[in-house]
Length: 261
Picture 1 (cartoon, rainbow, N blue to C red):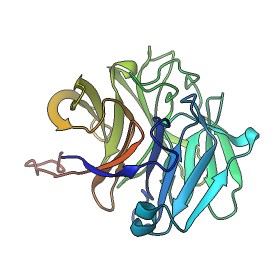
Picture 2: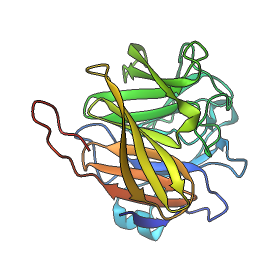
Picture 3: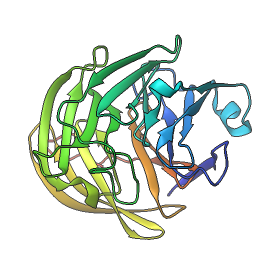
């Protein structure tokens, strides 16, 4: 069941965005970020960080940063990892890495990735590049023309942003509403109705196996603008039409395999 934390601090009209905690293993789990997109649903101009859950709930004691025009983000695929924000740089196929202590930016091209709404998620525009973190590290979820708009997954070096390895799948990315990665396995979601979502597809980067499944879950609002997993607390963090929502994940062991959702 979804647990609704609150509405983002800018209000209901700021429906797209992203939020969560640091997804690096062992990272400070009292540090939150909230990044509503501008009303065009595209630009990430401003974000806040909070030093505790109570501060997040009460909209207090926050640090608010307005990103310079040259360093704007694009889409809701932002993630916090090891005290950096990673996101799609505005109007490019580049990755941006923003240091939350110094606010300096590192950039690197995600080679071959499409951008500017070419292969975004269904009902979530401008999220051509989606960042993810799990037990195994930092990932980029995206599409390429060469793979016909299907999901492409790349493992990233968190320091240099260099691509360590890439996997191409057969699942068309715009048919999914969002995706997340757990233990190196990509899971994609789709809408069943205005209050029900389904995890319908998976791709295991360790084995190269892909398949379909049917795990239903409820949602508060109709559209999912971002969805990310945190390996420290085993929760999903959803930005749901402006609301900050979490889900607890339960893992079921499978004989001879790692636990699955």
